[in-house]
Length: 378
Ligand code: PLP
Image 1: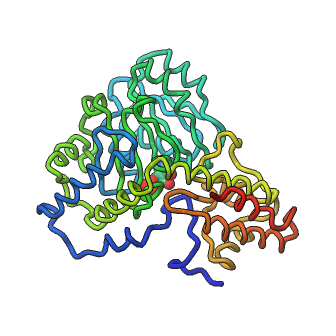
Image 2: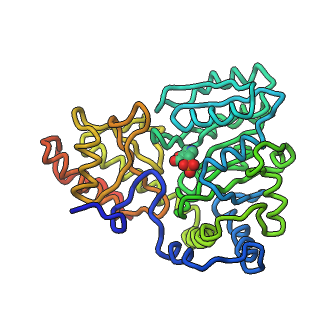
Image 3: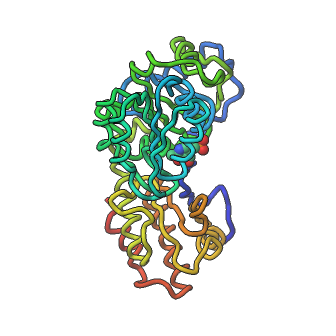
């Protein structure tokens, strides 16, 4: 079987597979982005956005990938005259640190090794020292398949009075994010993850407190300018019109499924993936109780690198999963199971993994990975 991008079993950690309805929605000739028709689409998107975030608030659409949303959030909200605390335990935590340092010279970074939970005690000690104006954290560390426990961190952030700024790019519509309960002030989602729209848009939720704290940072990504335009269903600059059309359809599909059901289905797929990994005799990269429901990160078996495993999946079975990043390249592989990923995707992927490991004489018990998936199907 040769790799075919149109028919592949597509389980990278985002972008995710896109529903044909969303693809069709994008196929339209150019629209006047200052005209009534497009403004009507923006109005519909605004009405639908609480379906994605599970909360109401000030919600914006930015043309640009998830990182554009992060840059918008940090450049507009990281205080100039107080300390900012960054918590990091993976590649995207390190990216947070890099972005925040472009906009503040008073950054304290509390790191934990990649794949370990956040260093919460150290973070709380920093908060107790005082003068922290913002706390920045990645909810779901896609690079290591780990969900950070924001529910546990939230009370100390709230007590400190700092703004709570969250990268929710691979969390939103994949794992529960309690915006109001945890007191999140700004949250960034990416169109290409749990929402299952094409890559290229960032969705941003802001609390009242965050709106009051906005200050000019980046020109293109000035959140105050975007908010002002959005009141008239407009955007300050030319938006990525086809992606807005796709976004509207992906939001309608999410509303049809319901956020709660999408989260439950994603959790169930994740449980199945973890059960199948066990049955293959492989181990998860993060500690199991911190394993993410949107991305399962698995250690490669000894002696089997990307060429023998991930590339073999692609070459021989037309299955795409993702490799590790940075120092984890060739050491782990990651299976994304968010958005509209579903049971057939897992069945094909684990059947192929059984075959590859079986041929290498490394499969403990044939059929058991598939059994683990089947047993968790509804
Ligand atoms: N943050 C997290 C947690 C991510 O998973 C990603 C992408 O995978 C990003 C940031 C960067 O987003 P983008 O590549 O859409 O700019």
